Amino acid sequence: KAGVTQTPRYLIKTRGQQVTLSCSPISGHRSVSWYQQTPGQGLQFLFEYFSETQRNKENFPGRFSGRQFSNSRSEMNVSTLELGDSALYLCASSLVRGSTDTQYFGPGTRLTVL
Amino acid sequence: GENVEQHPSTLSVQEGDSAVIKCTYSDSASNYFPWYKQELGKRPQLIIDIRSNVGEKKDQRIAVTLNKTAKHFSLHITETQPEDSAVYFCAASMNQAGTALIFGKGTTLSVSS
Image 1 (cartoon, chains in turn yellow, brown):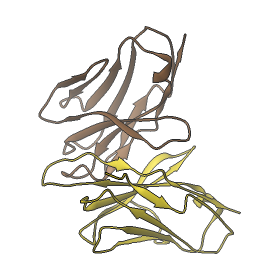
Image 2: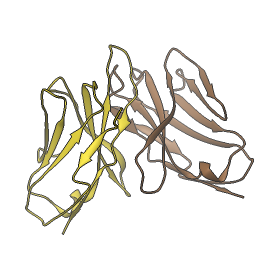
Image 3: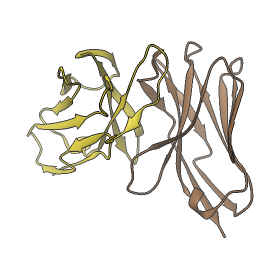
Image 4: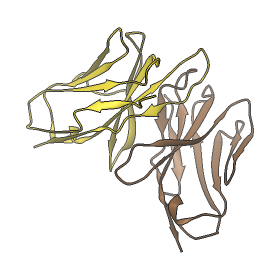
C-alpha cells in the first residue's frame, strides 16, 4: 500500500505571496492532519480534516486554512506569507475506525519564504 | 488546551546503555500517547504508543509507561545501538481518535559506540 504523499516537496516563495500544499493520504484513510515543524517550535498541530470537515484546529492565524476533498486528499493554503512561515509542513493520515488509530506522516513540504 | 513537556532535550549515552525520556501532559482527558522517532531529513515514524487504559507496553527493546494520576509517561530504550540515534517526540492526543497530536519539543538522542 502506498504511503502518504505530499506535493510539492520544496517551495520557495516571497513575503506576501500565497501557497497551496497538497497531501494524499494512504488509501482508505479518512483523516488528514497538518503539522508545522520548525527548529524553534518543534512539531505543532495546525488542523485536522475528517470526511471533508475540519474537526480540530489549533491557534494559528487565519492565514492558514485547509480543505479536504471527497477522495480524502487534503490541501493547506497559507495566504500573505511571512518570513516566520518558513518551515517543514507535514501531513499525517489515519484510518479512524471508531477508536484511536495510528497517524502516518508524509515526507513533508519544505517551504522557504524570502 | 493540551500542553506536553518533554525532558531532556538532549541525551548522550554509550552503546548498550539504557535511555529514558520523560513527558508530562496537562489535559487529564487525553487518552492516547504515541512516541515518534525522526531521523535527520526523514519523516516521523511511530515507534510505540500507549492508551490510557494501559500502564505499560513493551516492544522488544522499547517500553513506554504511563502514570495517569501524575499525568506523565516515559519512553525506555534498553541496549541502545548507534542506529537509535535520532530525535524522539512524545505526544498526547487532543481527541479520542488520536488524530490531533500535541507534541513535546523533542529529545535528541546520541548513541556513541
